[in-house]
Amino acid sequence: MNTEPRRKFGVVVVRVGRAGSVRIRDLRNPPASSAFLNLIGFVSRRELGSIDEVPQISLEDALSSQEIEVAFICSESSSHEDYIRQFLNAGKHVLVEYPMTLSWVAAKDLWELAEQKGKVLHEEHVELLMEEFAFLKKEVVGKDLLKGSLLFTRHSRLTWLVSLFGELSLVSATLEERKEDQYMKMTVCLETENKSPLTWIEEKAPGLKSGSLENMPNVGINKNIFLKDQNIFVQKLLGQFSEEELAAEKKRILHCL
Image (cartoon, rainbow, N blue to C red):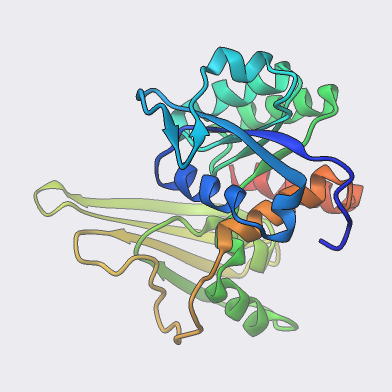
């Protein structure tokens, strides 16, 4: 992010839960990418007035404001599609927390809308900015997968698998659930394009360590991953991503959906 800011993009943050609060914090701090962004306000269903001197504004005002050019959508997943569509139709660039939508059809439609409007549509993928993913990526470089199994105990890592091993096809999937223990285990058998088997296990229950990975060494603390994602978004706003890079990212996201 060495470019001197010629202008600032006005930003609104939609919803201020955990992710939205982190976005506001990063936008108010002075890292390089924030020099290109000017936080105008936030949208919330609650009457909050302001947060750290950032004013609350209505959704209608955010959509109609000429000052606002970018929307950071940090709401619950089920509302992403509707918010993205509204802001793209209003001529705004969009950063949305994962997942962009809950269906492949909706995501494909929204990407076509973004292209028609000439706007950036960016889906957050902080899991690709984690130290654990960087470690795994180094481990698999130059190697062919013969057989693999990955266990996660919170937060889906399907994007990890596709990024590491390429496009995957589904062989089988099972779901085990014990509601009285708040326990759930999903086992998915996948296959790479070279027909190598890969098993993805997602396990959730009270007390399971968040985001742990079977046999994963301590590879360091994940620092400022939402800020790193913001940096990537700003690079897209500035046209610093090639068409090939953007097309590859879009293909991967749609494949995961």
